[in-house]
Amino acid sequence: MAYVNEEISKEDYEKYNLAEIKERTGYYGGSRWAIDRERWLRYHIRLIDTEDSWEEIWIKWHLYYKGYLVSVKTKDIEKKFNREKKELYIYKKILELEIPKEIEDQKEQILKDLKEAFEESCGDPYLVSYMKDKGNTCKIDLEYNGEII
Image 1 (cartoon, rainbow, N blue to C red):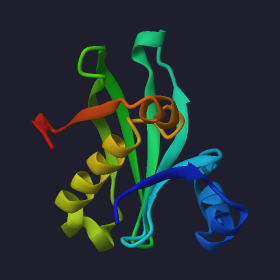
Image 2 (image 1 turned 45 degrees about the vertical axis):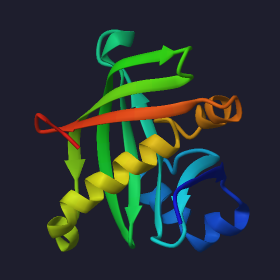
Image 3 (image 1 turned 90 degrees about the vertical axis):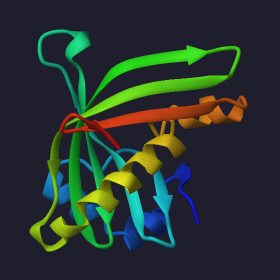
């Protein structure tokens, strides 16, 4: 099963213990998420902040990976929409990656799964409904430590 973008139901809020994430991080991510129920992966936004100007915006994401909370801070380097191809292209750079030591050996797969989640959601669980409902596609390049995932 691939990622699905959807509203977070009350049942899922309880089932996936989003209260714990809210307690640990201060924020659970709002009302939408991308989730892969078979692999038990989900991600959602935690915090958007700026450093001196709008151009310096970064986003902190959470990927709940097989029971472990992975935090990722990203910045969009480039965004462009090709009307002819009906494709949104986003170049994201990972600024920080926090992986619990118990699953550090799975970093490569975690990064691949994170990229898949970004592509499925067009880089934002709130943007996806607007993009995909209109027949558009999304392509994400995700950079980590100078390499494209």
